[in-house]
Amino acid sequence: MSNFLINSSRFGNGWTYEENFTEYATQGAADAVWISSDVNYARVDIVNNWVWLQDAASVNINIYTALDFTLDNTAFVTRFKWRPLAMPSGNNGVDYILGASSVAAPTRTGASDALISVWRDDTEEEQKGAGYKDGGTVSRSMSNFTAVVDTNYWIEDIRLSATSWKDTTYSDEFSTEIHTLTQVVPSTVISLDHL
Image 1 (spheres, one colour):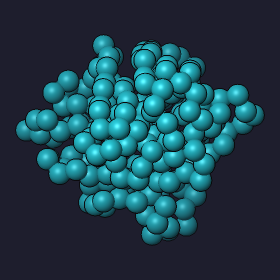
Image 2 (cartoon, rainbow, N blue to C red):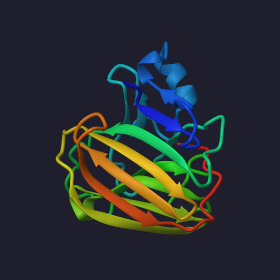
Image 3 (tube, rainbow, N blue to C red):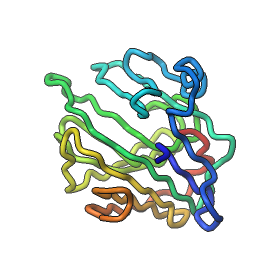
């Protein structure tokens, strides 16, 4: 299975983008495509076939890749597999955010647009949320879904319209739905071309 699947228009045939980390010949080749601000905390792992993220306390760490296309502003689908690991104790206020962005290396406070498919906050224990970033404004909805550490989940995100975003969590490869969160987003969240 590919790690990330994207249909950039939702109405087209097939997937526009597929990513499988084991297809990189070397770790260096993967590092050249998936740019990390610090490989000690965020890196593509070509052996285990995942993006590895580790708590870095209060330091902003990011990893991103640039797409060679821009996601449709009103309709697209992304799919990926997510396996939450235990967060170290004493990391109050540390969270991680996965999604599509309008810029490389986005931060919570910098100017960019983003649709966020996983927002995991240690103050919410293992709860999974979704949200968006419109310019410098961040908004999220924490769900009533509590993820189990070291368990595989499959995430599907659909931009239903310019102002609607649906995040669905599955317990298997996109057939058994266990949680859905639909969120209203500003139509100004556009030009997403990075993961």
